[in-house]
Amino acid sequence: MALDIIGPFDAFASAADKTLGGNPLYRCILLGPTREPFAAASGVLFTPNAELGRAPAEFDTIIVPGGPGILDPANSVPIASWLTRRAPHCRRVASVCTGVYALAATGMLDGRRAATHWRYVSDFRRRFPAVEVDPDAIFVESAPFWTSAGVTAGIDLALALIEADHGPEVALEVARDLVVYLKREGGQAQYSAPLRFQVAARDRLAGLMAWMSTHPEADLSVERLAARVAVSPRNLSRQFVKAFGVPPGRVVELLRLDAARTRITTTCGSIDRIAESVGFRSGDVFRRAFMRRFNTSPSNYRDRFRVNVAQASRPPNARPR
Image (cartoon, rainbow, N blue to C red; front, top):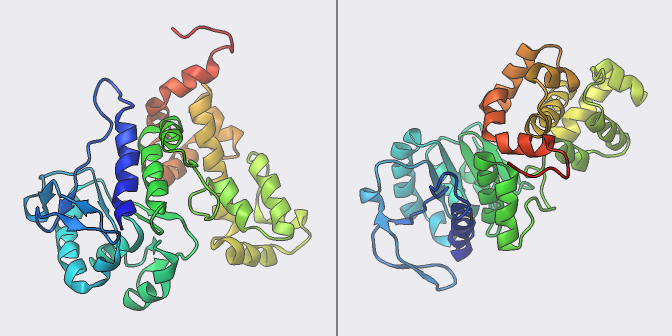
């Protein structure tokens, strides 16, 4: 599919113009089995920059686009073999649409969640039963792997990668350039934790999730939450697992981490104070949870977004220095 290639390419190209220190944020190249031009399903011709066998030695990110051709093992197996050799030496690997077939053929997605085009979910499950495919997700992160649904979802995926690398402000600028939503309706995995859980919530859980999202500092033990909606703790735990796929404690942790991430990038408070403000019992517990979730420390995360902190703490009418 041409858009599986063009969508992410244009998103990264737009981000590349928003330079930091004079260096482009991204440089993209297109790889093919050979250097020969190939036609997308629509007939659009592409010419690879390099063939797989002569690809550059290092990549930060590898993205596998989808299309009808990759469903044929004759095409997906050679790509999977190349990915098996190269994936351990790059920071992350992603797929768009049916590109996940080549990625799953490596075995590296076994035991992980993944996304693909809704039309191919049943076939994918039959071919790769060890992969937990999510039929509703726009994209899924299972670090270091990212997978997305079909066609235009490649743009959503690219925006998420840009946001992970350079923050929401850069990603939003790219979304504006492309005239697309930064986070669109239609899937849950793309949302922040509060919105994702609120979308999945039903009946009495909906009100509870809304309250939890705005009170991360409160006592959110399963006993207190159960009392709030007048059910037993065991019953509430079953409802959470059924609705969200995880127990109440995990939901609470994700909500608190999401709130903390926002406060880290928009306030100048100490890490320990922020941890306390979102309900963590100690700074050490918070740091360990933050590292598990975001694969970086709260201090490093703040350093990456120092400009956001400065802007947030500046009086409204103050001139930037």
